[in-house]
Length: 469
Ligand SMILES: *Cc1c(COP(=O)(O)O)cnc(C)c1O
Image (cartoon, rainbow, N blue to C red; front, top):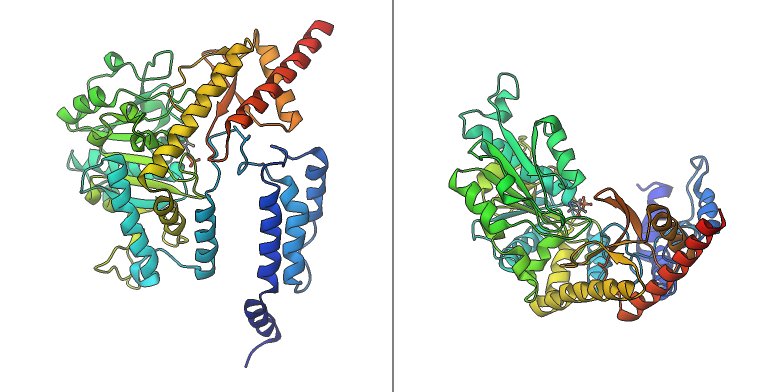
């Protein structure tokens, strides 16, 4: 017996009209990748109202639904797969990885266990080994595949928290915080917001963070680090989210390891410097840390969502995250949920594997050094137009300012309005700055020059405004 809805869906799965509609829409979207506005026009945003309807009373038409998504959704996307979106640290999507993702979407695997997805288990195992090799991490390092660095940082700090309590004979899982001994969190004043969030979520208390002063690039000043001990979690940074700077890992890890502190490195986008022959000096010493968090979806240009927690203290990571239940059934093979907060997850290792397999060592090297080269080009062309560059462009980030904050903020607004490229703003040592993140494989030197032109025009307009008030 089959219901009419089942029959409809059997036909749709095998009849392929839905997937043909999706394929045509996707190809149409891809064709517009390099001509699309960096941020949607006002009309496209207004047209999003099309989606604001009551829940339909009855079953719809599959291909129609896909076509509507393309007609009203695609124009309201940001062009982060193009070459001129410089907001956040977005990264594009490598074609081979998109292809892998399509296929893996059809698999619809649950990556919790080997027995719920043997193929994902194997791909995770392979990626884990490749990532250890890429970053030069110790052989005992385990990896968990999560949605992004927010989650990966949470995992690293949860493992560190478990260990810091364990070092004092306290099982935090069993006993919780009541009457617990003290643990410490030490990090730089420029730690990323998701680090602070993880500290809060894990109950360690933002007020308890021992903040360390940073230098003009946002790097922890080693002399300012307080005395560490085995109850401490020290959080370092590979890639300041504004300036792109890197902490002094060799010195700091040496000091922390001498007293048994836990060291977590937030390397969301910057850890990839380790994979690049001309930039690996930036990550010197990272292998001495205890845990590392890094994204696939930023510098490496995998599609969303792809974050990785790497941890040399596998026992603590597993102790912090393991779940049990009589139906779960861990195996001799790799069971992904041991290393992640989630139980059910999609098979995101498929596109990470495809990206690494496609690029290989030389491709990753070229990708990462290319982002750096484009950032350096951006800085130098902007400087030639009399913009001020406020950071050392050591990686992919460029911080730019005009003569005053009003002009800087207006320039950002007008650049965004132009649709030529997209940049956000930030505060850098009390000054308003344009924050540029070069992170897509698709960005060319022409994209950079074209964006610089948009900057000059926007600043002219901004100056005109100020002159006329
Ligand atoms: C982006 C970023 C994060 C958060 O990562 P998500 O993948 O967005 O969750 C954390 N730290 C740094 C330095 C980042 O750039």
